Image (cartoon, rainbow over all chains, first blue to last red; front, top):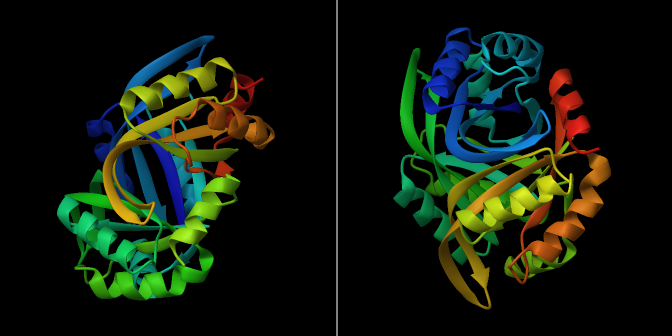
Amino acid sequence: MILVYSTFPNEEKALEIGRKLLEKRLIACFNAFEIRSGYWWKGEIVQDKEWAAIFKTTEEKEKELYEELRKLHPYETPAIFTLKVENVLTEYMNWLRESVL
Amino acid sequence: MILVYSTFPNEEKALEIGRKLLEKRLIACFNAFEIRSGYWWKGEIVQDKEWAAIFKTTEEKEKELYEELRKLHPYETPAIFTLKVENVLTEYMNWLRESVL
Amino acid sequence: MILVYSTFPNEEKALEIGRKLLEKRLIACFNAFEIRSGYWWKGEIVQDKEWAAIFKTTEEKEKELYEELRKLHPYETPAIFTLKVENVLTEYMNWLRESVL
Protein backbone atom coordinates (compact mmCIF):
# COMPACT_ATOMS: atom_id res chain seq x y z
CA MET A 1 0.00 0.00 0.00
CA ILE A 2 1.18 3.54 -0.74
CA LEU A 3 -0.06 7.09 -0.21
CA VAL A 4 0.30 9.59 -3.04
CA TYR A 5 0.07 13.23 -1.94
CA SER A 6 -0.80 16.22 -4.10
CA THR A 7 -2.16 19.76 -3.70
CA PHE A 8 -4.90 21.57 -5.63
CA PRO A 9 -6.12 25.16 -6.02
CA ASN A 10 -9.46 24.48 -4.26
CA GLU A 11 -11.86 21.89 -2.83
CA GLU A 12 -13.79 21.44 -6.09
CA LYS A 13 -10.69 20.53 -8.11
CA ALA A 14 -9.43 18.14 -5.41
CA LEU A 15 -12.79 16.31 -5.25
CA GLU A 16 -13.24 16.32 -9.03
CA ILE A 17 -9.83 14.75 -9.69
CA GLY A 18 -10.24 12.37 -6.75
CA ARG A 19 -13.52 11.13 -8.20
CA LYS A 20 -12.00 10.62 -11.68
CA LEU A 21 -9.14 8.56 -10.19
CA LEU A 22 -11.70 6.45 -8.32
CA GLU A 23 -13.73 5.93 -11.51
CA LYS A 24 -10.58 4.74 -13.33
CA ARG A 25 -9.86 2.34 -10.40
CA LEU A 26 -6.44 3.91 -9.90
CA ILE A 27 -7.15 4.56 -6.21
CA ALA A 28 -9.42 2.94 -3.59
CA CYS A 29 -9.91 6.06 -1.51
CA PHE A 30 -8.83 9.67 -1.06
CA ASN A 31 -8.84 12.10 1.86
CA ALA A 32 -8.71 15.83 1.05
CA PHE A 33 -8.36 18.79 3.41
CA GLU A 34 -7.94 22.54 3.40
CA ILE A 35 -4.39 23.90 3.81
CA ARG A 36 -2.50 27.18 3.91
CA SER A 37 0.59 26.97 1.70
CA GLY A 38 3.79 28.94 1.26
CA TYR A 39 6.28 28.29 -1.53
CA TRP A 40 8.87 29.74 -3.87
CA TRP A 41 7.51 30.53 -7.34
CA LYS A 42 9.53 32.38 -10.03
CA GLY A 43 11.77 34.09 -7.46
CA GLU A 44 8.96 35.18 -5.09
CA ILE A 45 7.46 33.70 -1.92
CA VAL A 46 3.76 33.02 -2.51
CA GLN A 47 1.24 32.33 0.28
CA ASP A 48 -2.00 30.69 -0.75
CA LYS A 49 -5.11 28.74 0.27
CA GLU A 50 -5.08 25.24 -1.30
CA TRP A 51 -6.47 21.77 -0.76
CA ALA A 52 -4.23 18.74 -0.18
CA ALA A 53 -5.26 15.21 -1.07
CA ILE A 54 -3.93 11.83 0.06
CA PHE A 55 -4.64 9.08 -2.51
CA LYS A 56 -4.55 5.49 -1.18
CA THR A 57 -3.63 2.72 -3.60
CA THR A 58 -1.36 -0.26 -4.31
CA GLU A 59 2.28 -0.08 -5.41
CA GLU A 60 1.28 -1.71 -8.72
CA LYS A 61 -0.94 1.30 -9.58
CA GLU A 62 1.65 3.98 -8.77
CA LYS A 63 3.07 4.58 -12.27
CA GLU A 64 -0.35 4.76 -13.94
CA LEU A 65 -1.65 7.01 -11.15
CA TYR A 66 1.24 9.47 -11.62
CA GLU A 67 0.57 9.62 -15.38
CA GLU A 68 -3.19 10.19 -15.00
CA LEU A 69 -2.75 12.67 -12.15
CA ARG A 70 -0.16 14.61 -14.18
CA LYS A 71 -2.58 14.73 -17.15
CA LEU A 72 -5.54 15.90 -15.04
CA HIS A 73 -3.63 18.38 -12.85
CA PRO A 74 -4.13 22.14 -13.45
CA TYR A 75 -0.65 23.14 -12.15
CA GLU A 76 2.47 23.60 -14.28
CA THR A 77 4.63 21.79 -11.66
CA PRO A 78 2.32 19.88 -9.30
CA ALA A 79 3.48 18.31 -6.07
CA ILE A 80 3.01 14.57 -6.64
CA PHE A 81 4.94 12.27 -4.34
CA THR A 82 4.69 8.91 -2.59
CA LEU A 83 4.86 7.89 1.05
CA LYS A 84 5.39 4.23 1.80
CA VAL A 85 2.99 2.49 4.20
CA GLU A 86 4.87 0.18 6.58
CA ASN A 87 1.96 -1.84 7.99
CA VAL A 88 -1.78 -1.94 7.36
CA LEU A 89 -4.78 -3.69 8.92
CA THR A 90 -5.18 -6.91 6.88
CA GLU A 91 -8.90 -6.51 6.19
CA TYR A 92 -8.34 -2.94 5.02
CA MET A 93 -5.55 -4.07 2.68
CA ASN A 94 -7.83 -6.74 1.20
CA TRP A 95 -10.54 -4.14 0.61
CA LEU A 96 -8.01 -1.75 -0.96
CA ARG A 97 -6.79 -4.41 -3.43
CA GLU A 98 -10.31 -5.38 -4.45
CA SER A 99 -11.20 -1.71 -5.02
CA VAL A 100 -8.44 -1.11 -7.60
CA LEU A 101 -8.73 -4.32 -9.64
CA MET B 1 8.66 6.33 16.39
CA ILE B 2 5.73 5.59 14.11
CA LEU B 3 2.54 7.32 12.95
CA VAL B 4 -0.67 5.32 12.77
CA TYR B 5 -3.36 6.90 10.56
CA SER B 6 -7.10 6.23 10.71
CA THR B 7 -10.35 7.96 9.72
CA PHE B 8 -13.57 8.45 11.70
CA PRO B 9 -17.19 9.46 10.96
CA ASN B 10 -16.88 12.77 12.88
CA GLU B 11 -14.83 14.93 15.24
CA GLU B 12 -16.45 13.54 18.40
CA LYS B 13 -15.56 9.93 17.58
CA ALA B 14 -11.98 10.86 16.59
CA LEU B 15 -11.41 12.76 19.86
CA GLU B 16 -13.19 10.11 21.97
CA ILE B 17 -11.07 7.26 20.63
CA GLY B 18 -7.93 9.42 20.73
CA ARG B 19 -8.50 10.11 24.41
CA LYS B 20 -9.09 6.41 25.21
CA LEU B 21 -5.82 5.48 23.48
CA LEU B 22 -4.02 8.16 25.52
CA GLU B 23 -5.58 6.87 28.75
CA LYS B 24 -4.36 3.35 27.93
CA ARG B 25 -0.85 4.74 27.26
CA LEU B 26 -0.89 3.28 23.75
CA ILE B 27 -0.09 6.67 22.20
CA ALA B 28 1.69 9.83 23.40
CA CYS B 29 -0.22 12.24 21.19
CA PHE B 30 -2.76 12.49 18.37
CA ASN B 31 -3.56 15.14 15.77
CA ALA B 32 -7.04 15.02 14.20
CA PHE B 33 -8.44 17.10 11.33
CA GLU B 34 -11.50 17.43 9.13
CA ILE B 35 -11.36 15.77 5.69
CA ARG B 36 -13.51 15.21 2.61
CA SER B 37 -13.31 11.57 1.54
CA GLY B 38 -14.16 9.57 -1.55
CA TYR B 39 -14.01 5.77 -1.70
CA TRP B 40 -15.43 2.61 -3.21
CA TRP B 41 -17.98 0.88 -0.98
CA LYS B 42 -20.07 -2.12 -2.11
CA GLY B 43 -19.73 -1.25 -5.79
CA GLU B 44 -20.52 2.48 -5.44
CA ILE B 45 -18.40 5.61 -5.12
CA VAL B 46 -19.23 7.32 -1.81
CA GLN B 47 -18.25 10.92 -0.96
CA ASP B 48 -18.31 11.88 2.68
CA LYS B 49 -17.21 14.26 5.45
CA GLU B 50 -14.91 12.48 7.92
CA TRP B 51 -12.16 13.19 10.43
CA ALA B 52 -8.63 11.78 10.06
CA ALA B 53 -6.34 11.17 13.01
CA ILE B 54 -2.58 10.67 13.23
CA PHE B 55 -1.55 8.71 16.32
CA LYS B 56 2.07 9.09 17.45
CA THR B 57 3.69 6.22 19.33
CA THR B 58 6.63 3.80 19.53
CA GLU B 59 7.14 0.74 17.34
CA GLU B 60 6.81 -1.47 20.44
CA LYS B 61 3.18 -0.28 20.93
CA GLU B 62 2.07 -0.81 17.33
CA LYS B 63 0.51 -4.28 17.66
CA GLU B 64 -1.42 -3.45 20.83
CA LEU B 65 -2.54 -0.13 19.32
CA TYR B 66 -3.95 -1.88 16.20
CA GLU B 67 -5.87 -4.34 18.39
CA GLU B 68 -7.37 -1.66 20.63
CA LEU B 69 -8.13 0.68 17.72
CA ARG B 70 -9.84 -2.17 15.83
CA LYS B 71 -11.95 -2.95 18.93
CA LEU B 72 -12.98 0.68 19.48
CA HIS B 73 -13.54 1.60 15.80
CA PRO B 74 -17.15 2.02 14.55
CA TYR B 75 -16.34 1.05 10.93
CA GLU B 76 -16.67 -2.44 9.44
CA THR B 77 -13.34 -2.04 7.55
CA PRO B 78 -11.43 0.88 9.07
CA ALA B 79 -8.36 2.41 7.49
CA ILE B 80 -5.59 1.68 10.01
CA PHE B 81 -2.04 1.89 8.68
CA THR B 82 1.47 2.85 9.73
CA LEU B 83 3.95 5.40 8.40
CA LYS B 84 7.55 5.07 9.49
CA VAL B 85 9.29 8.11 10.99
CA GLU B 86 12.86 8.42 9.67
CA ASN B 87 14.26 10.98 12.11
CA VAL B 88 12.90 12.79 15.16
CA LEU B 89 14.10 15.56 17.48
CA THR B 90 15.83 13.73 20.36
CA GLU B 91 14.04 15.54 23.16
CA TYR B 92 10.68 14.85 21.50
CA MET B 93 11.53 11.17 21.17
CA ASN B 94 12.43 11.01 24.87
CA TRP B 95 9.13 12.64 25.80
CA LEU B 96 7.24 10.24 23.51
CA ARG B 97 8.82 7.16 25.15
CA GLU B 98 8.10 8.40 28.64
CA SER B 99 4.46 9.09 27.69
CA VAL B 100 3.73 5.51 26.64
CA LEU B 101 5.52 3.60 29.42
CA MET C 1 13.01 14.63 -0.83
CA ILE C 2 11.74 14.57 2.75
CA LEU C 3 8.78 15.91 4.72
CA VAL C 4 9.39 17.43 8.14
CA TYR C 5 6.27 17.65 10.32
CA SER C 6 5.72 19.94 13.28
CA THR C 7 2.81 21.46 15.24
CA PHE C 8 2.23 25.05 16.38
CA PRO C 9 -0.08 26.87 18.81
CA ASN C 10 -1.97 28.69 16.03
CA GLU C 11 -2.16 29.61 12.34
CA GLU C 12 -0.14 32.81 12.72
CA LYS C 13 2.84 31.05 14.29
CA ALA C 14 2.76 28.23 11.70
CA LEU C 15 2.72 30.71 8.79
CA GLU C 16 5.32 33.00 10.40
CA ILE C 17 7.83 30.21 10.95
CA GLY C 18 7.03 28.69 7.54
CA ARG C 19 7.83 31.99 5.87
CA LYS C 20 11.13 32.39 7.78
CA LEU C 21 12.22 28.88 6.71
CA LEU C 22 11.37 29.79 3.10
CA GLU C 23 13.35 33.02 3.34
CA LYS C 24 16.37 31.08 4.63
CA ARG C 25 16.00 28.63 1.72
CA LEU C 26 15.73 25.72 4.14
CA ILE C 27 12.44 24.56 2.59
CA ALA C 28 10.83 24.90 -0.86
CA CYS C 29 7.25 24.75 0.34
CA PHE C 30 5.05 24.18 3.38
CA ASN C 31 1.44 23.10 3.86
CA ALA C 32 -0.24 24.01 7.16
CA PHE C 33 -3.66 22.99 8.49
CA GLU C 34 -5.83 23.23 11.57
CA ILE C 35 -5.86 20.24 13.94
CA ARG C 36 -7.37 19.09 17.22
CA SER C 37 -4.66 17.56 19.42
CA GLY C 38 -4.55 15.39 22.51
CA TYR C 39 -1.35 14.57 24.40
CA TRP C 40 0.27 13.78 27.74
CA TRP C 41 1.86 16.81 29.37
CA LYS C 42 3.28 16.76 32.94
CA GLY C 43 1.08 13.83 33.99
CA GLU C 44 -2.19 15.19 32.52
CA ILE C 45 -4.04 14.63 29.26
CA VAL C 46 -4.36 17.96 27.44
CA GLN C 47 -6.74 18.59 24.52
CA ASP C 48 -6.00 21.59 22.34
CA LYS C 49 -6.51 23.39 19.04
CA GLU C 50 -3.22 23.61 17.09
CA TRP C 51 -1.89 23.96 13.57
CA ALA C 52 0.25 21.28 11.91
CA ALA C 53 2.75 22.04 9.17
CA ILE C 54 4.45 19.81 6.59
CA PHE C 55 7.77 21.26 5.39
CA LYS C 56 9.06 19.95 2.04
CA THR C 57 12.80 19.96 1.43
CA THR C 58 15.86 17.91 0.43
CA GLU C 59 17.68 15.42 2.65
CA GLU C 60 20.76 17.67 2.54
CA LYS C 61 18.83 20.47 4.31
CA GLU C 62 17.39 18.28 7.08
CA LYS C 63 20.00 18.94 9.82
CA GLU C 64 20.03 22.71 9.30
CA LEU C 65 16.21 22.77 9.15
CA TYR C 66 15.94 20.94 12.51
CA GLU C 67 18.36 23.45 14.12
CA GLU C 68 16.55 26.51 12.77
CA LEU C 69 13.10 25.11 13.53
CA ARG C 70 14.16 24.24 17.09
CA LYS C 71 15.49 27.80 17.55
CA LEU C 72 12.32 29.45 16.20
CA HIS C 73 9.81 27.12 17.87
CA PRO C 74 7.76 28.43 20.85
CA TYR C 75 7.31 24.99 22.48
CA GLU C 76 9.54 23.48 25.18
CA THR C 77 9.44 20.05 23.47
CA PRO C 78 8.20 20.51 19.89
CA ALA C 79 7.19 17.64 17.64
CA ILE C 80 9.76 17.75 14.84
CA PHE C 81 10.12 14.58 12.79
CA THR C 82 10.86 13.37 9.27
CA LEU C 83 8.92 11.23 6.82
CA LYS C 84 10.80 9.82 3.88
CA VAL C 85 9.39 10.37 0.38
CA GLU C 86 9.68 7.21 -1.72
CA ASN C 87 9.00 8.63 -5.18
CA VAL C 88 8.33 12.11 -6.56
CA LEU C 89 7.35 13.60 -9.93
CA THR C 90 10.67 14.46 -11.62
CA GLU C 91 9.76 18.02 -12.55
CA TYR C 92 8.58 18.69 -9.01
CA MET C 93 11.85 17.33 -7.59
CA ASN C 94 13.84 19.60 -9.93
CA TRP C 95 11.81 22.61 -8.80
CA LEU C 96 12.28 21.63 -5.14
CA ARG C 97 16.07 21.43 -5.50
CA GLU C 98 16.28 24.76 -7.26
CA SER C 99 14.16 26.39 -4.52
CA VAL C 100 16.53 25.44 -1.67
CA LEU C 101 19.89 26.20 -3.32
